[in-house]
Amino acid sequence: MIAEERAKDIGLKELSKRLEEFAKARDWEKFHSPRNLLLAMVGEVGELSEIFQWRGEVDRGLPNWEESDKEHLGEELSDVLLYLIRLADICGIDLGDAASKKIVKNAIKYPAKIQ
Ligand SMILES: Nc1ccn([C@H]2C[C@H](O)[C@@H](COP(=O)(O)OP(=O)(O)OP(=O)(O)O)O2)c(=O)n1
Image (cartoon, rainbow, N blue to C red; front, side, top):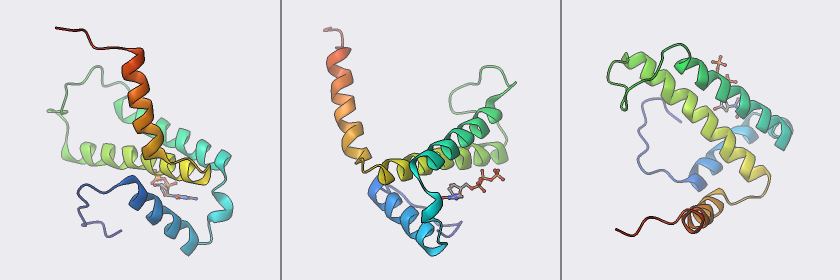
């Protein structure tokens, strides 16, 4: 993907397709086993955590953060998301469908208070 490209409302399936193309083009499919992808994702969660480490609590919207820090945050969030999508795909899980069903399940488990 071109760095300057802004992809609005891109879906999980499109991202999944792009990740597959990315891996195929580099002959990296052999590395994208479930275990490797899980470990890669956990590594990226660590990188994401480092951004927040030692900052104390931060306000919503990150009002006092440098733009470069916000950009870095976006990149690490993306790495976690992309590995998660790829992991689900390699495991044969439809992540959009599974997540939608889980939201319904959560709502049944934790009913909203009737006002
Ligand atoms: N075998 C690989 C290696 C990388 N990627 C993709 C998925 C991630 O979005 C990104 C991760 O790249 P890096 O391992 O270079 O990690 P960072 O981008 O976080 O770089 P750094 O760790 O130097 O900060 O590249 C991939 O799909 N398969």
